[in-house]
Image 1 (cartoon, rainbow, N blue to C red):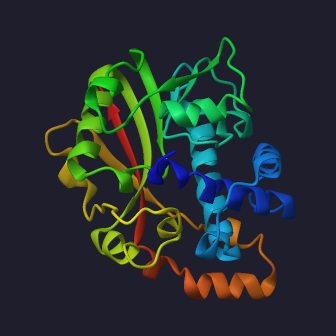
Image 2: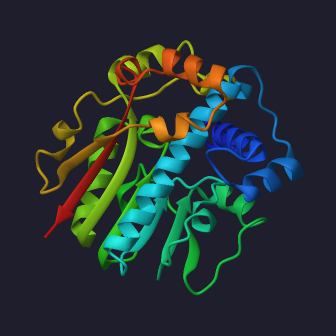
Length: 263
């Protein structure tokens, strides 16, 4: 695996550790995979606070995906850059079709733990390449989960991916997290992904800049660390987390955008 692919071990570790504590995220598959393979990560990647943040981010994406499925039950779920994530199992709302997409070498590892069926399948897609994104199945509606991938794509590549999805689906719901430009620059020197060899990241200060030539609208900005999840921590941890990861300060580095297109 290359450096970008190896970053998937960081959220996997975090989710497995938090799941064992039975807070924030119930993820027995992350626990199982981590116990079976014990991927080598070290340094900041093993931080308890990062684990909490990774689990909260995953839970926010889970809750949003369930809400979108309730609102648009026939929509295809596209988890692009799925890594080893078990969202397809954690989401309890029924779905007709779900595709987990990632690089071929990631899916090769993923297929050790996940089995395809009539409603669920995996697909090799490099999100940076328009011709591969165009191979995603067409349909009336899609729920696109873009968690933890935008920072590894240039702004131009993110824009092309969004426009490709817009052309394929009359109803399109997107949730994506991004670094700000400041966050991307700062991450070059102090970020857990540095520990697996990643040094180049990309940021987006105004998502609307990428939507200028589309009919996609910015529907909402969400919190990556909402109070209802911070409240699941122990009292001292809650105080520390709210101090260090205060929303006003955190937004200077990291943001979470919900986009929508209804033809």
